[in-house]
Image 1 (spheres, rainbow, N blue to C red):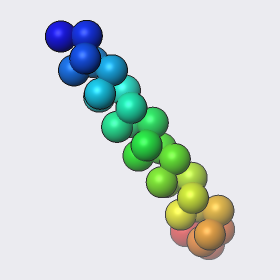
Image 2 (image 1 turned 90 degrees about the vertical axis):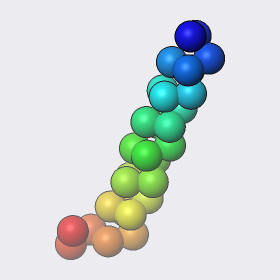
Image 3 (image 1 turned 60 degrees about the vertical axis):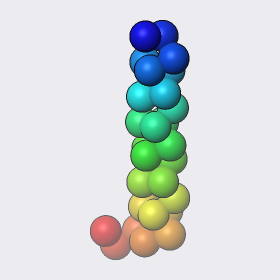
Image 4 (image 1 turned 180 degrees about the horizontal axis):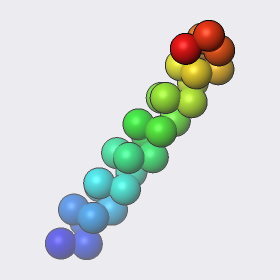
Length: 29
């Protein structure tokens, strides 16, 4: 159970990181 929660948190953090990269590369968006 704990592993699943940790995996979900890591995926959400990775998603936020990708969104931050795209936002910095494309400020117009």
